[in-house]
Length: 224
Image 1 (tube, rainbow, N blue to C red):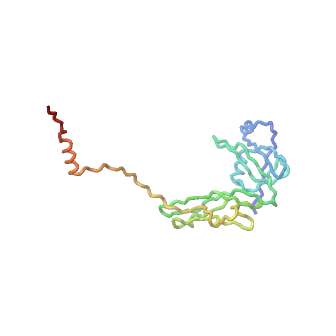
Image 2 (spheres, helix red, strand yellow; image 1 turned 120 degrees about the vertical axis):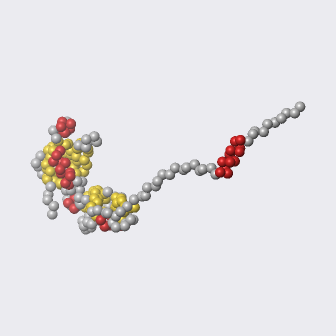
Image 3 (cartoon, helix red, strand yellow; image 1 turned 30 degrees about the vertical axis):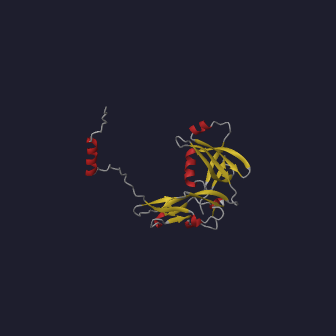
């Protein structure tokens, strides 16, 4: 059983200036969901960065606001500064541990494929699943070392997980065996660019051209 992850945040007054908070190494955020009022919070930026790297979007977290009662949540949304990549805002979604939720789970390639003149093309980077909050997987790992020939692929049907706890959300009549995750493709051969050279004139064509150039132009003689 995985260790319970508790993250401590503090309540934030709406009039607090977020720019000032960020200068102090804090990231503003909120906790919402389950038909309860949204709570504005602030958190240590370094601590949140570490938390997000460990838990991602699917790891179950228990948030404690002002050291009070812990609430089970998932990280719902993280906004970044487009210039320097720093955190701008983070949202936590309250969850009911007995009710299944939907989430996008990343697909990570592992292993190596050393087949010459080929490339591994990853078609899907993530897949939607449904599970209880505590059963959401962090990621799906796909071993590409099993690919041995061009055209061979790995599909969603090949993913390894507990099907009694996790369901792939693919829509009606969608067969996971037809949903490609990765495929081994041949490297396209480079086509050399050719320049059309002008054809050399034959000896007969040259003689004809020269005779035409040297021929006198006929003139009309006016007779009186």
